[in-house]
Length: 158
Ligand code: ZN
Image (cartoon, rainbow, N blue to C red):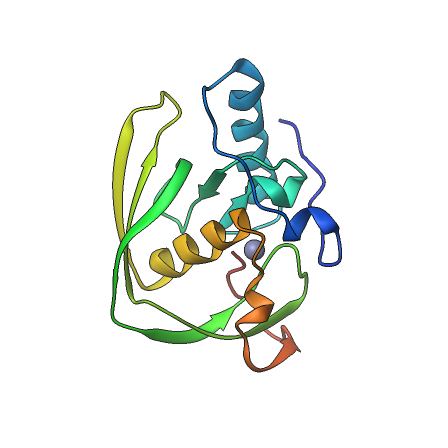
């Protein structure tokens, strides 16, 4: 198990646009394993590669139903709306209200570079949007309605 350092808000890497993965390499497989380890250790439900300082379009998510690995993910369909508390491992201890689609369909590649389609609602839809935003250098704090506030109870951080 190898943990990577999670970059926090203010680190310039978090506002950069990540590059697509052209081919999976042993180094990138290790990155994916390390991202999963780092995400679980930090009790997060999602992590994007730029959060560990790597500008590649790779996301890991686990909302409690097992790990999802997305390479070069794209949102291809959304519907509905949900407003709820959101947090981020790069903004520790804080959360804020964000409105996201309630349904999100994602097209991506898996670790073998085969096309996969995922559909998610509620927390999973929120995690898809949040993590894919990281790949474009966008932080949820830009979308917060009202003010960011300190987390006073345990909740999911994506
Ligand atoms: Zn985040």
